[in-house]
Image 1 (cartoon, one colour):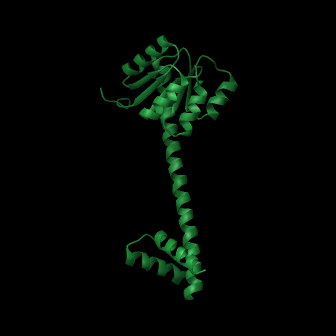
Image 2: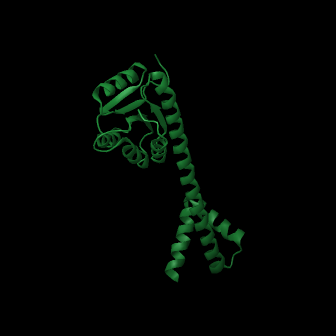
Image 3: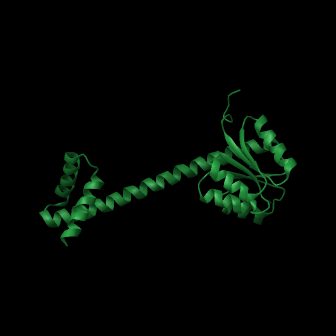
Amino acid sequence: MTNQRSGVQVLVAEDEAIIRLDLAEMLREAGYDVVAEVGDGRQAVDRTRELSPDLVVMDVKMPVLDGISAADEIGRDGIAPVVMLTAFSDKELVERASDAGVMAYVLKPFTIDDLEPAITVARSRWAERKALEGEVADLGDRLETRKRMDRAKGILMTRLGLDEAAAFRWIQKTAMDRRLGMREVADAVISGAATED
């Protein structure tokens, strides 16, 4: 059967072996591809870095490195969304998980019907986060280009006695003539001016 779950790679991190096996089997039966099963938080981080799964389903209380700390590392590295599993629902734990970048939270005991909406939410929130990060990077790049363009125009206005529009046209024409990006031309103007100072 083909559905939105087929091909979704999941790493399962749970310190209790029986729960880990049941969880992995539950996910496989629902159509997910369980790529690894680990028993502590450090293994979860290491295997997630190694495999880059689409999702990590992890228990909050784990040996070596607790689930929240592991989720924080995975989130900071931007590898995969984390769905946190726990038998505890206290507010402080939920806040810590949220601060660590956990995308969804499921209370034990759970069924696949409890887990699937959390997986859907986690993957959706992750996609939104990645899109936003891309937009922020693009905006930062565009702002930097604009700053360089403004600086290059200023140099051309001073050096060649051009007005701002003519300086812009000079950069634009030079970019077309040399088959370069306008930012590359602006950088060349800036570096050329710097060597003359």
